[in-house]
Amino acid sequence: MVATPTQVLAEVFGYPAFRGDQQQIVEHVTAGGDAVVLMPTGGGKSICYQVPALCREGTGIVLSPLVALMHDQVAALQMVGVRAAALNAAMSFEERRSVEEAYAAGQLDLLYLAPERLSSPGTIELLRQSKIALFAIDEAHCVSQWGHDFRPDYLRLGALAVEWPDVPRIALTATATPATHREITERLHLEQAKHFVSSFDRPNIRYQIESKGQVRQQLTRFVRDQHAGEAGIVYALSRRKVEQTAGWLRDAGVDAVAYHAGLPAAERLAAQTRFLREDGVVVVATIAFGMGIDKPDVRFVAHIDLPKSVEGYYQETGRAGRDGDAAEAWMAYGLADVVQQRQLIEGGDGDEFAKRNQISHLNHMLELCEIVHCRRQYLLRYFGQELGEACGNCDVCLDPPKLWDATVPAQKLLSTVLRTYNERGGRTFAAGQHIDVLRGVGSERVTQLKLDELSTWGIGADLSVAQWRGVVRHLLATGQLESQGEWGVLAPTEASKPVLRGEQQVMMREEVVARAAGRSNAKKQAATADLTEAQAEVFEKLREWRLGEAREQGVPPYVVFGDATLRGLATHLPRDAEALLEISGIGQAKLERYGEAVLELLSASV
Image (tube, rainbow, N blue to C red; front, side, top):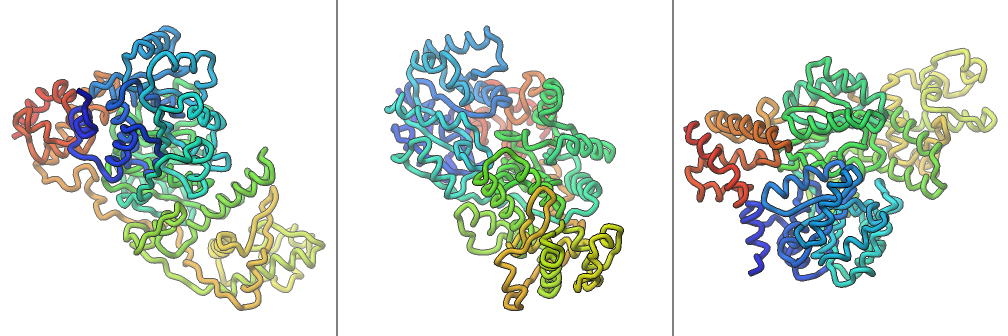
């Protein structure tokens, strides 16, 4: 008798009920339908293809770019009794042959492949040797050629519809604007698929963005004072800054490791393994780290450089709080970040269309930083969703910025930019030079170029450099200024004319550097925030036991049990096997593997 989706969910994965759209998606794919699924990170996308694969005849083929994490994903499935395996370049010839033989013999429920493997000789022939239950295309936004994370190998996945027209396909992603959603549909030939678009909202994540001052001190204060002993990810733009930042944090007493593509493979693996399998480790990384991170108890994601796009920012911050507990997304950014990103784009290899697309992405990211209303409303609107009222869980909602009328300073700045162009033979300069003119700061270069003869010389001495940089950022974000060329020179746009004529007011936030925002539960870690003192003590004992089990088996602790399951055990203190099965996250396989040990530990704790 074939198990129903609800039976598989309970008996294999130990969950009493589906969440959100999961049941509709699972039933649709199990019945043989194609699906496009847009669901936020932590929303439970994997259940949407794992359960149908177990309900249908054959092997579910999962196409995922996450080669580095396939081992843990497969281990988690094997832990609950699912016959799962992966094929990737990191495996030995003997390991690959063993998996191929198991697949051909129909002995696998799920097989994970990287998309580029479909181009390898023999892969298509191998897949033809056994019945396929479904194709799951994870991180499907990678098919978007002008998106933030394009992967050429994804373009070949549309051919699956031709080769296996009767096999259901499900494409899943957490980061898709309406335009990317259309591209996924068209490029993967999913025009007849049913579309499931969940809310992009992650209400448990608090968004906080501040101006970059002494970023070393800002980051250290945020990590050490607000997230001591908690797991987190810090993103930096360059490899050098990654290593420097990890050093800063270690000097401040934080257990931090560095991760970037330039490190030896063994060092990268060691850093990733420590982060995934130990508690309270902070990894400092370039964006090469993180896609598909399954670690559910990441309590914060921090950016010390401006991300390249809202999509990238949303995906990276979404790696926090996958377990649904309180988490935080913190970022410090400055004008230099904008200039640096523009220089990277201008100096890149893409054509003009690609560069304009990247500039557009960057401008939206800057706009998110500069807005004076709810950040979550902006994020959701960017992905095509409206949030009726302010979220109450971002820095703008919790500590509304003081606004000031920056119309006159904006006019002064725009006038200076125009004058350096019109009165200096078509020349203009980067932000720093214009700010020096406005503040009347002399130098040999100023004298040489006769900038001190401009009518705007010294008319902005009443504002600090930080405030003027804030004005520049705001005008860039709102489109009155643009940054051009390798040196990030400023140029006014058509949108600046109403400001210059006094027809449009410029209201912006006060420039506040290093504003610290506390958390309502800052003194109590998220994992134990709702537990009594006695329950928290049991939780810590369970966590210590879990860590020992995980080390013995060579898997991350969350593969054994997630924090939510440990909280359920600490709260309800089940006394027998039947009661254990009532705890979310405990299915039949885990009951058989861990039930006796857990009951013994709980009994000793009462």
